[in-house]
Image (cartoon, rainbow, N blue to C red):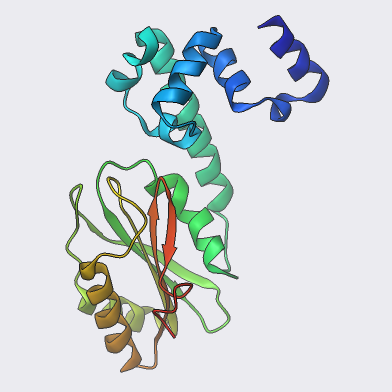
Amino acid sequence: MTTIAQKMAARGVESLTDRELLTLLTEEESYADALLEACGGSLARIAAEGESRLRMIGGLGLRRARLLRAAAEFGRRTASELTAGVECIVSSDDVVRLFRPHLESLPYEECWAVYLTSSNRIIERQRISQGGVSGTVVDHRLIVKRALELLATQLILIHNHPSGAAEASPQDRALTEKVARAAALFDIRLLDHLILSREGDFSFRREGLLQ
């Protein structure tokens, strides 16, 4: 622990490895090792674990589990605050950075739409629907209706997969096609549909499923 503290003092907290950072938070190397092993070496997966699950990993206990949950929430709120002022979208990566702090840790699905001008300036970010672990109902007509109200010329869809990989389901593909066709009737372009999960992200445009 002393060596880790000395390293942080000399080189900054950003120099610490994941194991060293977890050791600082949990006060024991054995807890850090147990957490990394249980969560496949992923800090994101550790941050997404609930309190009851964390406290059981390696005998971590309630106090340390709550400290980890507080640290994860601090990071999430910081990331969310940093992206709150984003006004323009340059690429799909910008959208991922914008929404991952909010969507990544949710235990249920949410679908959002970002409405844009022709120069990719954000007009509005709107939650379209909220559902369960395995899906949410989205009305493509409401998405296009809002675009018309805002005089948006472009839009991007985003939703999360809380219990699965970042892959497009048949329902996701059907929704994307419906929104793209309905929007095109009013000269509105669906730029992308992004799916976020703890494992990564899926872009319809990147995969060649949107032109």
